[in-house]
Image (cartoon, rainbow, N blue to C red; front, side):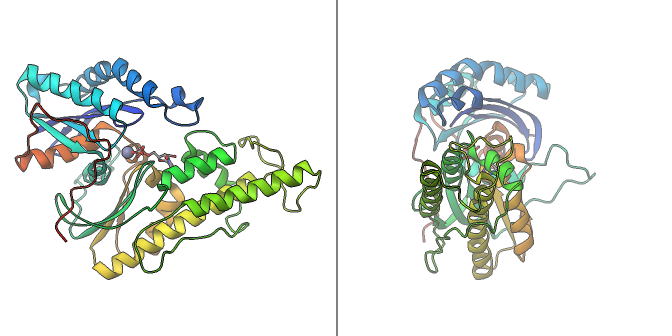
Length: 364
Ligand code: KG4
Ligand code: ZN
């Protein structure tokens, strides 16, 4: 049995978890900072790193306690060293180094993006069956959709990545966050848009989809600008005292920046456009590369409309982690940590953070 302590502090969640053999979550503690950042409408980097400083030790202690283990029971410490906010990453990396040094434990540096993919190796905490779910089978496609990344990756084996496409501008989650702000829906934008979209009609506005020819790359900034233009036109009409014919009263859930903006319909149409492009490009790649399955990961993979359409429109099995494992947490870092640890990888005491770290790609 191999026990890994996974530590995650790349953005605004302080996470620590104990993972057994890369698949069993023995504990998974996350201290979220969402309430602290809400007033700024996004993550405030300096506040994030200071908060990680305050919470990291109690979060790790709680993770060990929940798992019923001590430092001496661990086989290694795995810690995210990038990509992410440098000041936030430093807190996790330095804490991991200190524990590893003091306890004589091996240290493994983890790429946060791999964490989002390896969430699919973890056995969901509420797994209902006696036998474990089988491990994902290669070759497979991994779609990482988070606040900072949108990447479609062909995976041939553990740690073997071929990048098929990535966003040329905004990440999918970033687009959700920006459009939510335009619609006055608050932070974080993804869950707020999803809630509003449930009350709206996805066909009410036909928003642009950036297909970019045959490419597997993505672009979401045109879509965001299209929503901005519609919001502006409603604002101008409101200022001129004209009420647009499609205007509908928004529900109490939504707090539009300006009255008379059909927030729910816009949210639903926006979400549909993002989902359409993500699903269609993934479907094309499934056919071209004849993969066995598709894995999703990252905060946007929590979106139920995306999960639904991926499963419905793809000809191969689609795996999506439970919502709690889509967003940032230590368990996914512990999962990658196990596979890297058994492959013999070790970080030195000079392990540094890399804010712009990318996936380790195979030679083309
Ligand atoms: O993976 P994550 O927790 O952090 C990063 O590594 O970036 O992703 C956060 C992103 C945010 O942009 C958030 O708005 C988005 O994931 N998100 C969602 C949903 N839940 C979180 N986007 C769409 N629908 C959701 N239900
Ligand atoms: Zn993330």
